[in-house]
Image 1 (cartoon, rainbow, N blue to C red):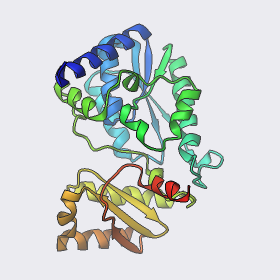
Image 2: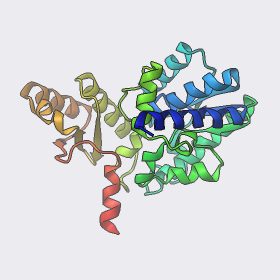
Image 3: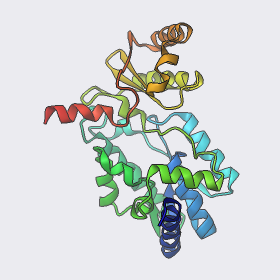
Image 4: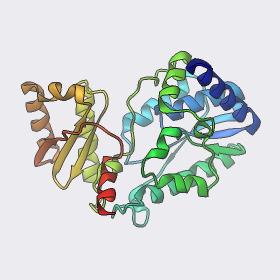
Length: 275
């Protein structure tokens, strides 16, 4: 069996799993994975599949806007709910299990929305690649009985992008994204002010054409992660000067570049160093 046949077999397996559910609410952020899962569920189940989007200060407005546009484009039902994670006990203190605290509340909201929509199951879009990092949020998903059809079908991020491309989804080459709280070093307080700082900083980098990036915050220092092939672009004098000037206007005192480049979960590296 070649790679193309293997991906096709996984895709058929996913569609069969969704058909067997009968109805499902998909936790929909607007990202690559959840968009693919939602569109596939909609193709299989029609009106018995719906999107549940959680709006929060830890997600940029552009993400919820793009999620809404996606649902309108494909005529998919969408239920939108608001959650303030800073009101969750312990979240703002940013402990290593921060993601669990937030994900549990978010997935409870998705379950409640599914019930309101009279949909039997709730699902989220994690894939097989997500098993390789420290992700306490997965424990919340499992505890609440939220399904992970993409991971169960054995689909990787690259395979999801390829299938999304074949389906003509606008999200197929969208940059990977995670909530803004993941930009904070563990133990540093998460505040509305700093969330805005990080959000504005990352939006600037996107506007400047950097496709995959992160701005990690350490006090008043920004640590920029971009792909290694974009290092030279970041160091161009006009670009560098604009970034420094803008970041300082946002509230940062120091602006640095991470020489390892972009990678997911870089804040988790400190956990490994302590163990």
